[in-house]
Structures are given as structure tokens and as C-alpha cells.
Image 1 (cartoon, rainbow, N blue to C red):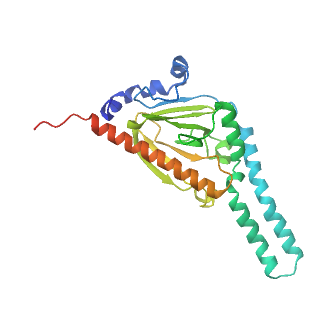
Image 2: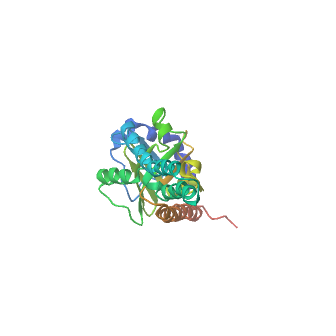
Length: 251
């Protein structure tokens, strides 16, 4: 089925989007992707709720401790090279462990306990942020992820299975894939997020995935590079499949 059929099936997307219909069809399979239309199921959070978000933010407080201690030590020392270097060293140390400060260890444990799977070449523990946002209120202010879960790539599409959101996307429904910096939240150091624009889900403009497995910045860069490669490969596979399924022009 080609992209034209994807477009024809868009009128059924509101039905697929509903939680009621998702409950009738049961759990969306991981791989392979059987349907050629994007499907989204949203339920109430089970584990990734406000209390979990508060625990994630507690990891960030831990990173602030070395900075606070360095300032206290600096105030007790006479002005000199050591007193000037201590706060800078503490900030650099905290930046190096920024992924730990995001609570990635807790996120990985939650996803692995839920899905019983470990990250691999075709599976990534990620956060998903939708546009427009699915979550609101204090929770959306404290955490930029709408959900966390396992992103799995198959031969014809990918599936995100989170705590409360299940998203199934055939490659032919990928309109574009772009890398976007986390900006100030990630101190412009954390690995970029992958923003995918989708066909077939009216009201949902895009979904952004970012890795949540790393504990240090270099690992975040490595995993982000792998994730970008998979997303770009998915985009290319969708284009090739769409072109191959187009009818040949008559001469």
C-alpha cells in the first residue's frame, strides 16, 4: 500500500485515535507493522505520573550539590586560582553527568520492568513528546516528556510502547525527520531529539523522541547518533517504498 492509500485512510484516523477503539482491538503488536496507517492509543498514566516526575527531578538536585559545596568552599578560601577554579570544575562535572541528572537510570528501570526488554540496535529507551502536548499542568512544566517507553524498529515501521501511550507508525506515513536540540534544558550538550512529522493522525503534528538510557554526555551523543540513523533509515525506506508502489507512467 502506498502513500496515496495512507492519505485515503486518514479519514479513519479519528476512529483509530480513540481509546475506545483501541480497547476493542487490544494491544497493538510491536513488529512487524501490519497496518499501513498510523495508530495512536492514549490511556491514563500508570507509573509515569506526577510522583514519578518529582522523583526524576530529585536527580537534578543531586547534581547541584557539588556546585553548592564548591561555592561554600570558595567563600571560605582567600581569593586565588583554587577558589576561582572550584565552581567551574563543579559545573563541568555536573554537565558531564547531565543525563544522570535527568533521572535516566530511573526511566530505564521503569521501561525495562514494564516491557521486559533491554535496549539494542533496533530498540531504544526513549521519551516521547507530542505536538500538541498530551500532558498539561504542573507535570508538563516539570518534565518535557509526555511519556517514556520502548521504541522498536521493524522492517516496515516502528512502534513506541510507553507507560500510557502506544504509537504505531508505518514508514510510509513518515513525512519528515529532523534533529532538534534540547536547548537550555539540555545545556546544549545533551543529545538531540528526533522530531518526526506524521501522516494519518489529524490533530497530531509531530512526535519527538530522545534517548533516556545514558548516564553521561558521551553516551548520550553515541545513542543519539544511533537513533538518528534508524529514524533516517526509516524515512528513506518509506520514500523508496512509496516510489516503488507508484504506477508507472504510460508512454
